[in-house]
Length: 253
Image (cartoon, rainbow, N blue to C red; front, side, top):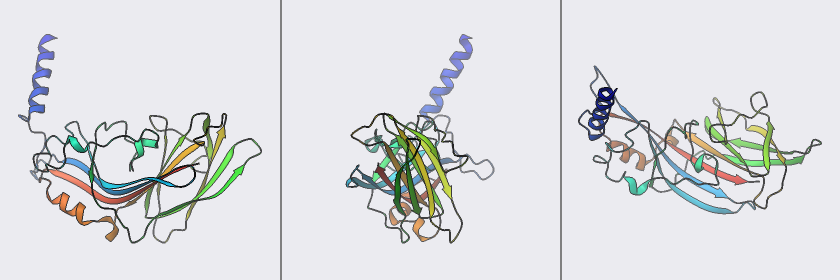
């Protein structure tokens, strides 16, 4: 048992030190490091609909245990001084996760960059707010945007997400307690309309629910930005960076 522990410890130290380099661009035996680069603009609204925060940057996620440690020597601007910080009051920390894997990736980076301006911007609005006979509040939304969008929900203290018009009607949380919805459509799709119902057990001054929507531009001219292209060119050939433009908007009701 002691020998096995020693072997595992030595192997771990050798891998972390770079002696056993885990990546390769060899076509016969490729071992790429996969990285997501999302050039985004985020907009946060308060309960009155006012913009309380707006920022832009390239959000960076590395999909393995080494993080950016092997990337930083090639791209010095990606370092721990630009570690992304969680927005505690926002679902999934206030970032446009393409998939709900936030609990698997503990570290990510946010490199400041100019705002994005897709030619076909996404729109999101509240169509109606109704009190139901069974004492819940139904919020009906409409969204238009690119072929791939993500929707996030976090009920506030004293409220629960009772049901919605999505799937079989029963909301299922992602790990951590927030709700994640992935939506995709083909060409010339009509506006996406859906509703959620929130039961308010105890009213709070900060509202009953926070929702956010991310629009992912995965094709066409809107997918690219000059900042993304420049950053991608700096990555070594043993990496596989997937890059796209997205927008993120958060609302409180």
